[in-house]
Image (cartoon, rainbow, N blue to C red; front, side, top):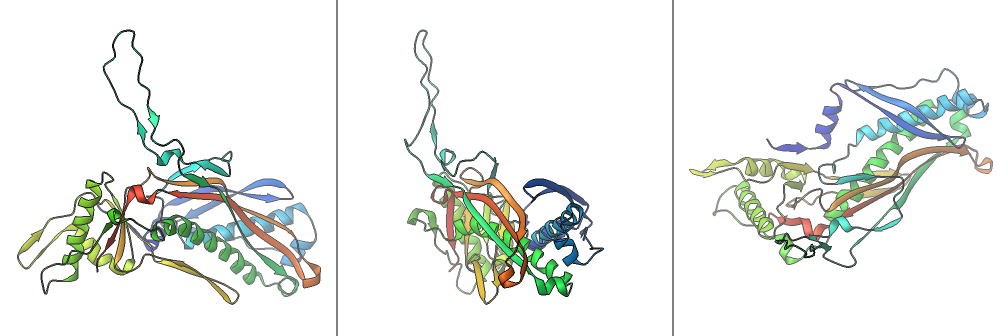
Length: 344
């Protein structure tokens, strides 16, 4: 069965059943947790029983904790709006002890050979093919916003919620970008490219898509890096799905294309911050990437998104600042695991 991954599909899946998980945050230098629970698509929304200004300025721990937990849950709600699309491609390494820079030995191939062992002889031990391999890096990602005195004086709770949700949206959009953008922006050698294979004159576009994908599957298998995941643009969805599942056209039977089990459709995101837009490009229409997943793709998590708040800047009438940060990395061995495919 073909597994099709889209943002809409993942959001729909979250609207079924109960999803519960603890979420950490930092308050006054101490780590706390609040439970995030989604029941049939509905997530708890905290409602203040006091004006937000009073909760932020009176300094009581219960009020600050209630306020911070609302921020955290609002951020989580924002993250639900932009699901993570790269999970079928990347293998997760979640370890607080990860160094800032490390050798990505998982991207190298080992040389192990079994030989007949003669009594008294030595066992031949395997080695890593290269003495020094590629490097993976953990980077610091941070963003934040400010609660102004005007927001507090006029009790603009809705503005607070919008800012919180936007932080969650921005975090997941950034994660999709650093993982999928590494594939989209890479430069591929001639051996990693499959050009369009046109169908007969007058045939529909999906015939060209079919022939091209069939050639790409063959090219990747010949290079001993068979792909099973296809990363593509939503605009090409109909033609790609029809091609992979197979069809009959003008009396010719085109059987299903073997090997491709998952399609991920990614169109990027555009985020606005004041007058500046941040654009995360998606897959170009008419192009896709046939990927051998997991082996050479690592999602590196030293610390996931953490929310902290502190006092603001009185000179600018900022009452409080909220910062979200995390230590993340992504490693993609594109040349060893990807076939770039063009339909035109």
